[in-house]
Amino acid sequence: MDKADLKKLVFMVVDDDGQVRHILSEYLKSFGIETVLQAKDGMVALKIVQTHSQRIDFIISDWEMPQVDGLILLKAVRNDPSRENVKFIMVSSQSSRERMKISKAAAARVDAYVVKPFRAHVLHEKIQTLLSGEIDPSVAEFEGILSEVPSNQQIAEKKNQAQGSGKVMLDKESKGSGILANLKRLAQKGPGKVTLKADVMAPKPSEVNVANDVEEFMGQVFGEDRPEGEQGPPENYNLNNMTVPVIVSLAKDYFKASLFDKNIRLCLDAHFIYPTSADILFHLALAYQAKGELESAQDQLKKAIKIDPYHVEAQTLLADIDLARKTA
Image (tube, rainbow, N blue to C red; front, side, top):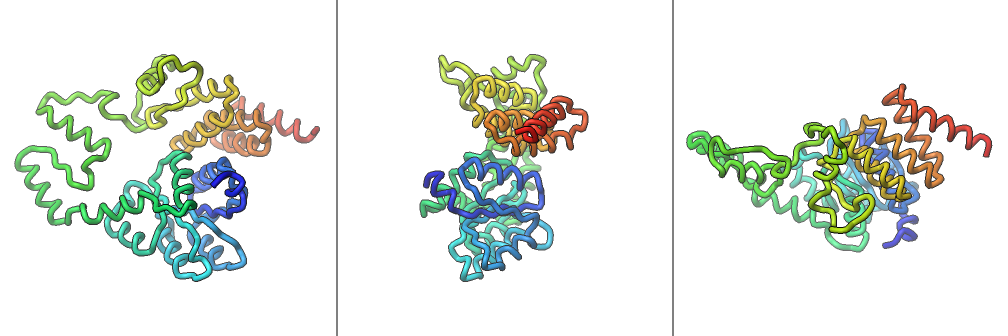
């Protein structure tokens, strides 16, 4: 389905976090979707669903919300004959991947899951998969976990055995996951031989030590993935290994190369991970301004200034845009 077809669809984003709602809405707009409804919580979304005069083709909802959570909303949609064809993606955190929740959502016929944080292309691929009539792999993945997850008694027995032998215990649910799989490999080296290195276990963004030389750190982030002979800003990057200074440096490179769409996508993805960075919002605004999307640029600048009232660059650019729009 191309952008022309996506324009006709009506999406509803449901999340009690305003910044997450904004990011998801920006993702959808970047896919070519023009009509995006926003519900500040499950209760508001439920009222919209029950207003049958409002067309809805697709719902992207957070799982954990007060009063009316994503599961209650999903059941309400599935029990409404007029909404039976609505596609439903459940957004969850890692902590939400529990057996009981997964089984209940599967029984309520959820169409796909996505785990926060995620990048725009992940959401886009899931939307395309569902709109093409195919089954999203995440549904099979989550349902498959049910048959593999050991019971609480089995887990307790394994822990007791591990404590008695001094070994690291990894249950089936954690087997194969990135960090825990690395821990297992490290544990196999034996006592006193475990050394944590950046290329062995990727730390969380908040735990990354910012290199004094940003260019040196950029090399660490892109070194192995960058094709030989590639010139200009890298096409691929691992956002989870990037700090704010590195992200800003890459955003500047995209801007200089007039790759404004890549700049916008980078900053939107980064804002998901660093929601309190005024610098990321400022560079997002710069890219919007370069594309002539002044209203979007103003919105990002206002958010940047709200985070950092003393961000001079954001204040100056906002004043320039305000003046330009008034005199246009």
